[in-house]
Image 1 (cartoon, helix red, strand yellow):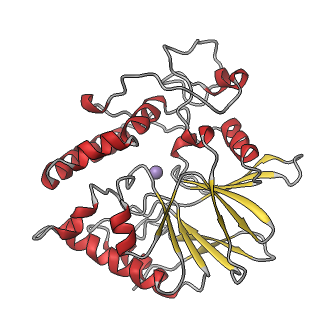
Image 2: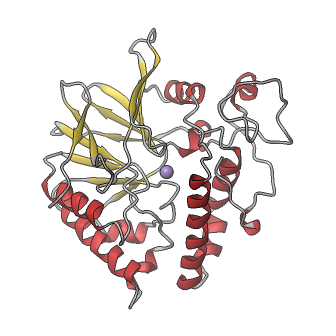
Image 3: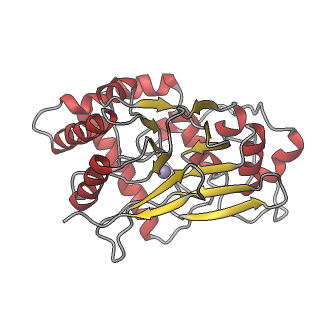
Length: 320
Ligand SMILES: [Mn+2]
């Protein structure tokens, strides 16, 4: 469970759930600490129901342009100044992809504390953000680039998106391509077992919270972000496990949007899952890989849809 100890970030009000029939809700509730164990006899605590906006709101949609033959998906690159090799591989990919459209499904950046980062002086994070902006702008001059927020870069705003020539997408978004309907999301909203995180997410995705946060001085926001990252790293080092996407929620989300294939990142567990083999067409879930150029086996993977072909995972070579 991802926990956030910032008291000011805690959720005070219970949230309502608008979309799923109430009969399925108990099944989607997890007790903190119980991970993926369904049921286990324990009743849910308090007013905790379903946090997932993905299940509450119908998806927006993107229709592939008639000329699109190839569409690329990437996520979870966690770009940061000190990971130069991953940045270099990404930069090379962005300059060379032959895709007709690129979808970035969240966590492109390790952290994003506000679009004003690009205007800061004498700040390595600012210089890095400007470098990334250049790469995105050069790519969006060649092909449409779509960006969906992840849990690390949810504060990336219209201002920066525009400066990069990319289109912000709500989570989730439907994509009609090659006669199929895909549903795209980052994935965090469907990890229902991370109850604490779902509370945190609801809080920080509220416009009022974001306005208040962004009104604080950049240096303070950077300090808070460092604190959160340290917590996250400590949790990782402690061997704690994270919940995976809830399969029931994934199926409901697909069905609600008339889609058969869910494409998402976030979990860093790249795999193709069949959710319902009997459905017509079968329901499946394609999970994107995170990126790490310096791992013993570098992870630099693009998911590629090509008209008339099955989805393909393209492993890129580290840049030299
Ligand atoms: Mn994520």
